[in-house]
Image 1 (cartoon, rainbow, N blue to C red):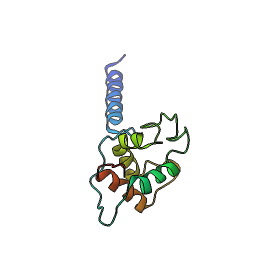
Image 2 (image 1 turned 90 degrees about the horizontal axis):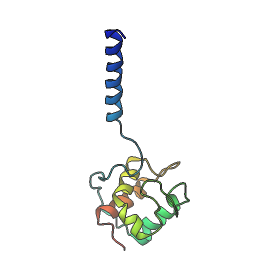
Image 3 (image 1 turned 135 degrees about the vertical axis):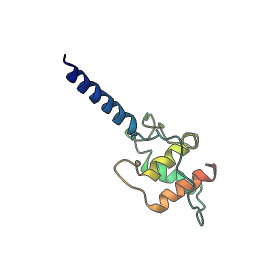
Length: 124
C-alpha cells in the first residue's frame, strides 16, 4: 500500500475513535451522577403518595420497560428497594428527558422525583 493510503486509513481510524469516545451512549442508567440539586421549595414529595404511583404508571409498565423481570437500565422498578437503589439513575434519566421512553413527564412530576431523590430517597 502506498504511504498516502496508509496515512489516510490511519487518520480515519483516529477520527472514528475520537468521535466514538466523545459520544455518550445514551442508555438509561449510564450516568450514575444525578444532575445538580433541584429547587424543592414547596415540594414535599413522598415515595408512597408521589414517586411510587408515578413509577408504576409510567415506568414499571412491562418487561419492555421496567416491570417485573426487566433487565432494561437499572432493571425492574416494582418495589421500594429497586427504586431506591436506582434513585440517582432515575433522576438523571427523567431530568435529561431520556425517560420515560415514548412519553414525557410534566415539570411537576420531574420535580417530585428529583426532590424525593435530593431528600434522601426515603421510604415515606
